[in-house]
Image (cartoon, rainbow, N blue to C red; front, top):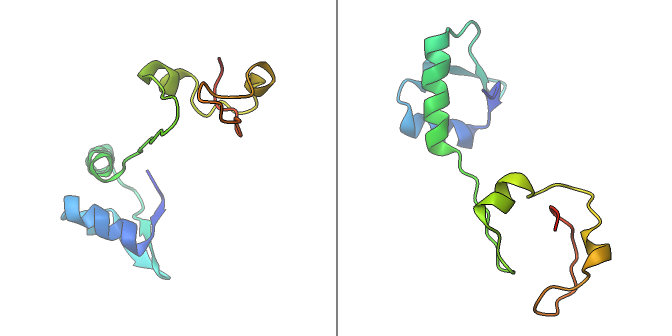
Length: 100
């Protein structure tokens, strides 16, 4: 669980978890997690955060399968460009994420 949230993040949380004030309190312009949250409160907070946190992967190139995203996406430091330096469309590859 995040120990602190920005005002915007706290507003997003409050939209899906009406009693979010019991989990976070404002201190010095940020919202800090309340001390001594029990397991039930942490589960409720986790479930609420699942509703407001998204990860979008947008690909306008060759495309990636679910397996490639789960197993290889953002594996930094591969030698893929040494093996294939251009995409199928002829574009010069500028980054190496994952493996072949």
